[in-house]
Length: 88
Image (tube, rainbow, N blue to C red; front, top):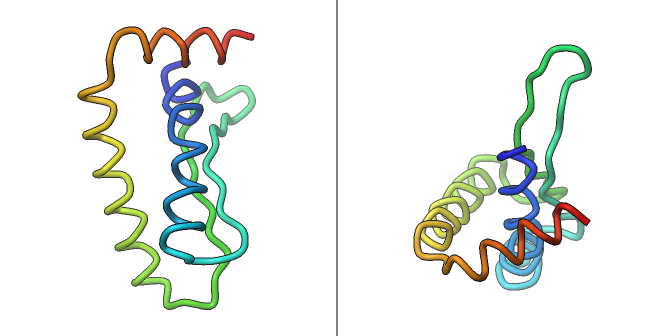
């Protein structure tokens, strides 16, 4: 559930930062994935781009560091809004 919540929180910023601000590619998504029956889940970030994969990896890593800071400083109220939105 935690990975689904984090994916929900970073989904819009991933599009805005990686696609709109950094213009890395036309398709940019972030989402939660879960293996059936295995109990394994994670967060995936997809970037379709003509740019070098190493460059893309550095930009995604920088984005994730930025999001970590946002998560650490997020107000309780904003966190509860995301939690409620995911529940719906």
